[in-house]
Length: 340
Image 1 (cartoon, one colour):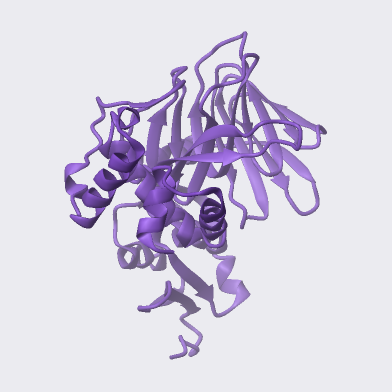
Image 2 (cartoon, rainbow, N blue to C red; image 1 turned 135 degrees about the vertical axis):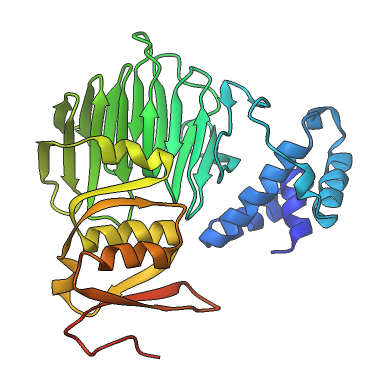
């Protein structure tokens, strides 16, 4: 898609037919959506008084900013707040992305406007809502927040992993919706892991109380502090258990804590954080257990070396120019290594 076409769409300079083509392009691939979000962010940050400008002037201003590559002058200060209606956003960590996205709720309702926040692969984001609720997004996570909360409740939609510190408001309960689960809270700290590619969704309660249902309304569990619900997305089976909550809090500070965790499970997290593909040359290797703390700011090779100190395995890293880098984990007993 031509960049000028996208800029015209963002600034309202396209007719309806051309706008439909742009929306279709945005929804075709994830990369297209991310490029749209990038340009939208530049527009939001660079033209605070844009609603006072003629549309055509707005287009010319944005086009000039992008073409001159002055992104370095568009800095997000933690004291500067985006003025999105009822949403107050403070970007405190790297990897912050926001855009406006419209979704049709039903055939007989008007479109509802959302703000979408995204933490790219290998990054963590933190922001605050207008009600004071704080949200952390782990790598590869999206969350959609209505520009204006419903008069009866507060509801957000997410995919990935997020930690919430919800401001207590008895008159307006807070809901978190994933593809499978609906979580109801009043004033609570909890973690939700609901990546589409994972077999399970997990809700871990730090303090307060949450009620969890399936999206179809079937009640699943009430959690108390220190409890976790594991929901199998394929079978619908649930497991409520007591857990050490520290690993579900520590990732906000750039730490991955593992307690007797399989390498297969660890690989899933490393793949998201380092944006790589990890393979095992045997299923047996993926079942090796590891206990320890991994710092997210360390290079992947250093992380893998730490893991191999306690496991009878070795690794190879293959750097690819046109796709994700590949990592092969193999047993010391095995002679099978990565294919060229």
